[in-house]
Length: 79
Image: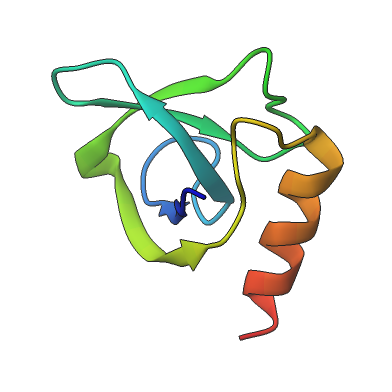
């Protein structure tokens, strides 16, 4: 059971948007999904320094759906 990180964009037109980190490309880039604008089959590539860490979610990305990602982000916003 994996934990996924939640991050908030600090730069770009998506500033302030929350994402779940779906993976890393190596180097300085993270693959980000939000289940809405950026679905699991089309993650957003963003530099790690352009996001801030906002916590963890118990989402298991190996079996998660876009709806699961949306629920995890909605739950995180309640905190």
